Image 1: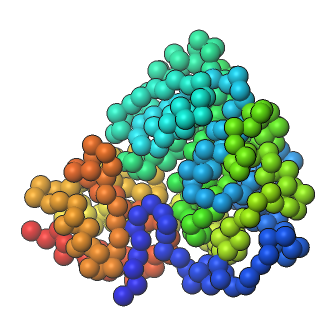
Image 2 (image 1 turned 180 degrees about the horizontal axis):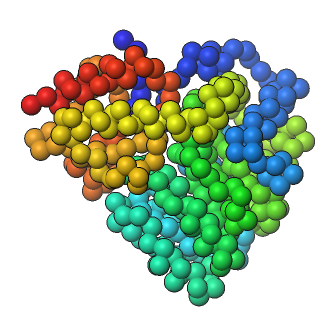
Image 3 (image 1 turned 135 degrees about the horizontal axis):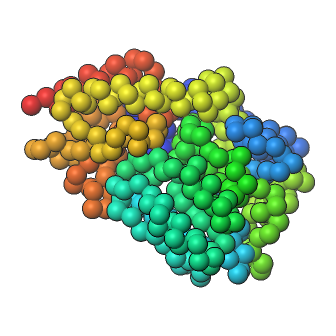
Length: 359
C-alpha cells in the first residue's frame, strides 16, 4: 500500500522526481553540475516571472529554516532594526533567529489563531524606527494564509523592506514580487515544488543582496558568498547535488501542471474535497475557508477523539497526517494536500475518513 504524506512537507513524490534524484552521480566541480545549477536557479525565478536582472535565486543545502536564517542574517545590515509579525510557531521562530544573532528587533505578538492586526503594524511602523519587516506568508501552525499583499503595501508606505518566509507557499500561492518593498523570500524544494528534502533557496533582489551584513554573521549561510560563486558557475561548499537533480524535474512538472496557479487550483480542489468529507463526519475546520491556505487546513478534534486515535486510524489506510503544535496539540490536527496525490488516493482518503470518524 502506497504511503501518502498529508503532512506539510516532505511530500509524496512522483516517480519521475524520485528517479531523477538518483539518476546519475555528479561531481559538484564539473561543468555538468553547473549547467544543472544554472537551469534550476533560472527555473526558480521563472515560477513567478522574476527578472534575472533584478532578482537572484541562491541555492543552499538544508531545510526551509536554513533559508530563513540565511535570509535574515545576510540581508539585515548591522544597523538594521527588524519588526517581526508573529501569529504562529514560525513567526516566533523569526524572533528566535534574531535573538540568537543579536539582531535588533521587536515583535507584534498575536494569538496563533488570529489574523495580522494591521492597525498594530501601522502604529509600530509610524515611529520610523524599523528598517525591515519579517513575516510568514503561510503560517502552517494553523494553516492561515497571512495577507502579505496588504503588508507589502504598508511597507511601501513606510519605506521599509519586507522579508518573507514563503517556505510553505512558494509555488502555490500569490507572492507580491511586484511590490518594491519585497526584498527577499525564503523557500524550500520539498513542499509546494514537490522536490526532495535537503535543498532550500532564497530569492532576493540583487540590490538587497548587495546591501548585506558586513562583516558576515555566518560563513556557510552568507548569501552574497553563495551568490557570487553561483553567478560564476561555482559553489563555495558542497551542494545538495541529488536534491538539485530532483528539483529540476519537479520544476518541469510544475510547468506542465500550469505553474503556481495550476498547482493552487489543484490544491484547492483536493482541500475542498477533504473539507467536505470531514464536514460530513461533523469534523469542523479551525479557520474559515477564506482564511486558510490552499496548501494545508487545520481541523478541530471532535469530542471523544484524540490525535493518536485519528493519526493511527488513517495511517492504517496509508495516510500520514500532522498534529497540532504547542497549546493546540490537544485540540486539532492538520491535513496538507501537497505532493503527488492521485484521484484514487483521494477516494481512498475519503473512505478512510468516513471509517475513522464513524461513531
